[in-house]
Amino acid sequence: MKTMKLFVALVALPALMFSVSHAKGAIGLVSGNLTTADACGFGVGYIGGFAGIADEGTSIFGGLTYGFSDYTEGRVKIGFFDPDVRGADPKIMVALDFKYEFMDYYDRLRKNPFDLAFGGFMEFVDFEYGSVLGLGGSIIGSIPYRFQSGHRLIPYARLNLRLERVSYDAADFDDESDFRVGLNLGTKYEVSDNLGLYGEFQLDGNAGLFLGLDFRAF
Image 1 (cartoon, rainbow, N blue to C red):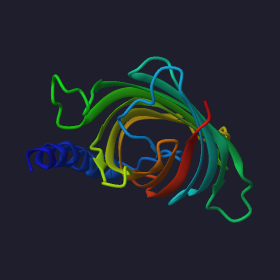
Image 2: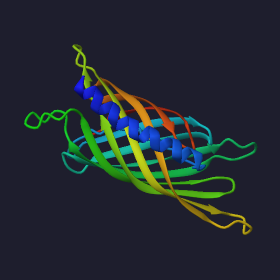
Image 3: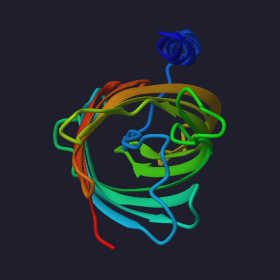
């Protein structure tokens, strides 16, 4: 019960901050979060495939995750974003992120109530009117629940604070830069130690549903 109260508190603050961000008209991210706070481990690599259906359009992309240490990992996501505009062509999107897990649920000495990580990210995507660059930091919290079968269900939440820069193609518009806040709430289901399924809601300027899977490649 105490664990759940702590996790709810972790989510409540981002939810409040989201309401402020949404009111200011953030464009939002197109690649979601799609990861828990738990790091994959040193020398471990995962390959994933993901899709998002959101306010600004549909995104389809792949991801490669690599563990640089037991508690640090980096990831690259590359794919296409199809804006929800008639006649618009799909655009290339690129995202990079990293995280450091500083609270480990399975640390028997500290007995942490959940996994907690902080990190940074960058996302670049083209729109019909120009390009959008998001650059910022995030904090991720998750709690693993293990079933008797050995499978794990891992609810997670991510709060991000970023600088969102919009560069317009038309000379009549000046480029814009604003600080934005976003919230992602999702669940990972581990089919096996090497395969995970994701379902996630993004609450941001580009609010929507993100789904996908990743599997251990090495």
